[in-house]
Amino acid sequence: MTAFRLIEVVLLVIAGLLPIMNPFSTAPLLIALTAGMTAEERNRQTLLGCVYAFCILATFLVAGRFIISFFGISLEGIRIAGGLLVSTLGFRMVFPKAETGDEKVAAQKDIAFSPLAMPSLSGPGAISVVLATSAQIPNDRIVLGNIVVMIGIAVTAFIAWLVLRGSIYLVRFLGPTGIDALTRIFGFLLICIGVQFVLIGATDYFVPLFTGAK
Image 1: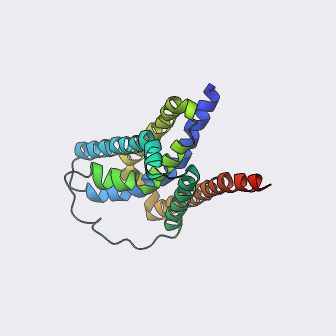
Image 2: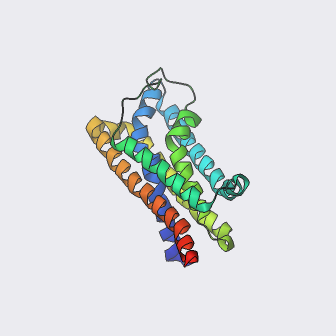
Image 3: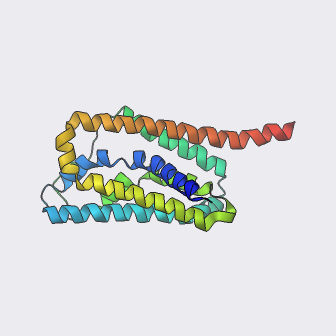
């Protein structure tokens, strides 16, 4: 695998994960939950949240093949299911509903793992993308493929950390309208990525059937 190909794969991983992690939509949640914290504690929670998110996604990347074989799930099924889930999340971002829950309660002492890392940054959508990506790594390049994809996950988590670190200034600069616009744009990208996953999975499943029939 050439250096150009490695960079291409890393960029593809980032393009698939970043819209789903969507640190821009997590920024208001972070600000609300850390309202009573000092700047140092807020930064610590932000860093830990991104580290936890990386660890969660890396775990699913490494154990993805075992999960597939243990439950008897086909690669095509993973791609189609992941595509449907990603598309659903994308539609929710493009057409948001009023949220209910306890997101506006008083600041918690430790929000790094939940809700920052799980489910905000490394929720079902991000996990499904990692599983689908793991399923596409050739058997003879599992180690190299995992390393390359893990680099993409690490870069995405780093980008999320940068966005969340400057979230206070970002939200003040963009305002509610700007954040809403970015969320909708990322949602549209998610829909496109999800549909592509479904198309690839359906093609891989049905083409051999028709070819064999002939």
